[in-house]
Amino acid sequence: MGEWTEFRSGDRAPNEGTYIEIGEASFHMGVNNPKKVHLDKGEPFPAASNKNRKWKRMH
Image (cartoon, rainbow, N blue to C red; front, side):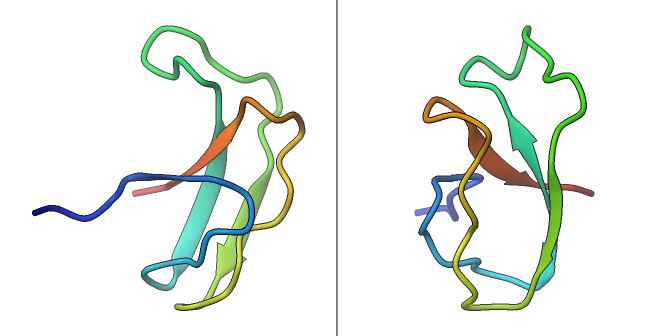
């Protein structure tokens, strides 16, 4: 089993890093001015700009 790559608001960060807000169909729909947050391991994800958006780790 692999690790999740997309997270909802309230989920806990699996690893320390910078996470970016993505759209529900991120592979073909970009988000203008997405939020970016830096979280430590175990910190909860903040609320996204709307209910359909998720968080993904930046590389």
